[in-house]
Image (cartoon, rainbow, N blue to C red; front, top):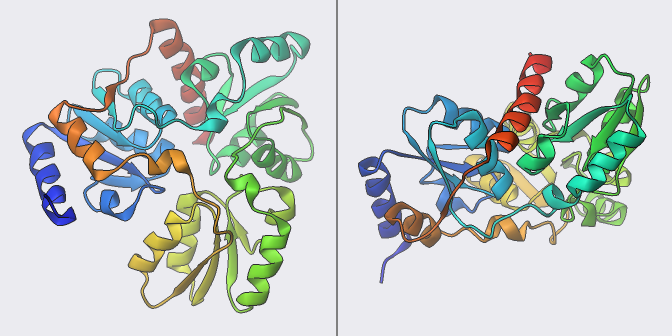
Amino acid sequence: MLTTKQLQEEILRLKRENDVCILAHAYQTHDIIEIADFVGDSFGLSQRAQSAPQQNILMCGVRFMAETAKILSPQKRVILSHPEATCPMAEQLELDELRALKAKYPDHAVVAYINTTSKLKALCDVCVTSASAYKIVKALPQKNIIFIPDCNLGGWIAERVPEKNFIFIDGGCPIHTRITERDVLHAREQHPEAMLLVHPECIADVTKHADFAGSTTAIMDFVSKSDKKEFIIGTDNSIVSHLQYEYPDKRFFELSKICVCHDMRLTTLVNVYNALTGEGGEEISLDSETYEGAKRSIDAMLSYGQ
């Protein structure tokens, strides 16, 4: 029987011996965060993979993140720690449905949230992250936008870019959309001195109450720069845990106790260990057509986002 510390030490030994860079999304549990080389949002991790000296990348997150890392680092070996860890939002739109939308609205630019499969990205004009979406959409020459798949993030952007016209699908993060305005009112009542920080994947009735709305990294950055002492966190509850470790002099509260991504929780320390020993995980591979199309939309994001 191994303790958590012993298992972590063995993982650290194996990653050094096998030339592996471990990437952990911020929604991973803290025992995984502690053994990662880099922690962050999905696209930021892919960029870390690109610049890392290691030739092997182990993604502790979900499939679209591992695919994005492979797109940015095609020469590297990219492993997804848990093969069943996917993102429900990334798979909400079928390829044929997107092709039909493009045929119906040929003058619209297709903007894909990074939380999409690589095959969907390959059919789009440009990708965006929650942090870059406003800047990129505003910079696009097209006035008409098809925004996939998250209508909540899309609506949040549309309010800030009123000069453009948007078409949305009925998509979004099933975890963030479970947070309600009632949760906000209850949290405000329980913690009247706390600032409310939420992810723009939340519904409009939630984000309208926020003191700050932004990506997971932006929320954590906001806390680091704020002199306030209490915060209500409107995103995956793992962030509450991480912030409690990082800022023990501050207090953090969940906006909703049900805001937990079960796909992120699939990955355990044992999964990481098994992936490092070759007994688990899945190597990511993309066909040339998907790779080239998805890379084009990501390159466009980098171009517009600069």
